[in-house]
Length: 454
Image 1 (cartoon, rainbow, N blue to C red):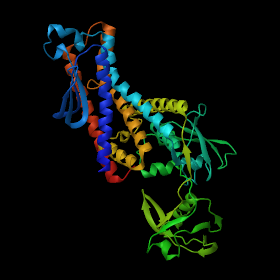
Image 2 (image 1 turned 180 degrees about the vertical axis):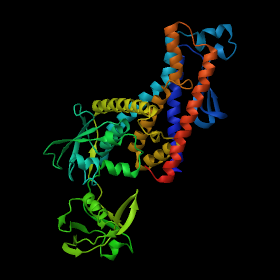
Image 3 (image 1 turned 120 degrees about the vertical axis):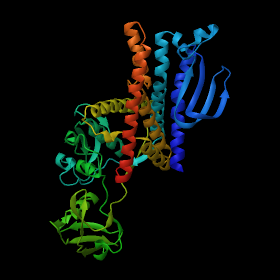
Image 4 (image 1 turned 45 degrees about the vertical axis):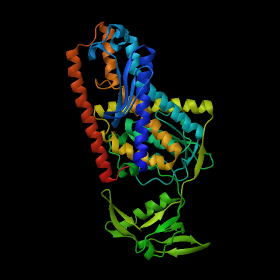
């Protein structure tokens, strides 16, 4: 129920803001608005405003529209002709069309700023031992490294206040096929080093569990055993929840990542290998000899003890003042918009995976997860979806605001409007492209659900 309510609330807000942008600028330009509708189909609520606009809520909430007086849609009374959309100057018509995406963009900035002002406790960008062979290991990342800044080119650096900032930078570099430079220190903020993750080597890969393992950015966790499955090899060896692992086969254990990799690699071909462990339990050191079981993991043979590992990551409070928070909102919205446009371009030429497209099922799932996590995560979710809606609507497709802006650009350059015949043909082509995009996004949602990718 939380997922449904959070999804509907997000849809209602973002659609209302988008259509309100069209409505307000249309009224400011003297255009008569006949109907302001949230949703399509059967009207379930109606009210008429003082200016004669009919405000409606319809049964299918997957969009909305603002219907304006227009001579192309039918006869217009002579005394109302000046209030028709098609009679307004070109610059006003373009402003009315652009106002919807602009309203969503402004909302995204405001929401990102609100997230920055409110602040939240977030996991610290403190890294654990990277998996063997991963990009992070090859770059020289070590357990206890604290990521302070990131850069695409090693020149313009962005601060990393917490783990979500790093995750966003990784996602951006992966989508755009760019390297990612990390500026790291030790946990106390000393010994600065710059590392380069060759993210371009993974460009175009589908976002599955193996991909994230190959990147290798693992949050730091203490080498603690948090859970032991009854009847598993860990339980048979005498391991208990709360044990702190000190060493394996005489080698000191730095963190949960090192411990995880040591367990996974404890086999010789198809034969598991017994390990010599020293653990701290109740202030005393206990020696154990667990023997794992073998299992397949993403096509690889790995060893498992069927135990839970690692402590909760250290958290830091991240918040900003009024001016810094607003500027962060502007920066985040611009960076996300630029990344989205570049990613779409890469998908168009086949350089990025089409699995980056998400549909309504995934969006609803994210809405529910963020709402359950609290107000700040939900506001951040709304900001991202609002900005995505703005960018999507600015695509040069005839069914979208961007397509209409292209019509106005043609008119401005040629001095004549696009002919009705061409508009009909372009509308059909645009509708087909949108349907294909929606079908692909929905297909990705279904595959994600079936395979468990996140």
